[in-house]
Structures are given as C-alpha cells and as structure tokens.
Amino acid sequence: MPDSLLEIIAETLEIGVNKVKEDSTIGNLPNWDSLTHIKLVLKLESRFSVRFKAEEIPELTSVKKIRQSLEKHQAEGKTG
Image 1 (cartoon, rainbow, N blue to C red):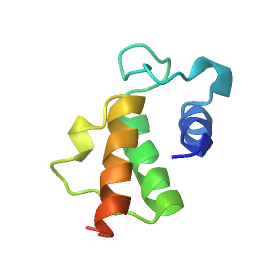
Image 2 (cartoon, rainbow, N blue to C red):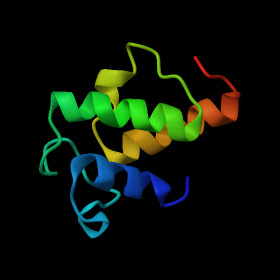
Image 3 (tube, rainbow, N blue to C red):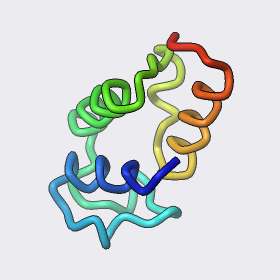
C-alpha cells in the first residue's frame, strides 16, 4: 500500500500526515472516534475500490490492521 493510506487517515482525522505512523491506533490518534472511523472506512472503500464486510469494520483500529485488510482485499480481488 502506498503512503496514500497515511494521507487518507491524516485528512480524515484533520491532522498532519507526519502524526500518522505505522503503529498508530484508534487510541493514540487525536480525533479518531466512532464517527470519524465510519468516515475513514468510507474514504478507504472509495479510494481503494474495496468493500469491507460489516464484521471487518470494527477491527480496523490501527494503520497496521487497515493496511493488512486492504492488502487482503486486493490480493483476493474481491470487493465484498
């Protein structure tokens, strides 16, 4: 995944991209709350042309987990 993932997260959370690291999580980034989480998921789906399953969405709580899920979707060639 290119660094566009970090840019999307930073844009959605309205923070500088330099504040988003590979080990960033919902617990250590400002503004990452439940509403922003949904906005982030929607942006990720749009940007990467994927469709997360309902049970996946609550698990996307870190940059690492998001990256892994996106890679899985792209490797499987599935959108939902």
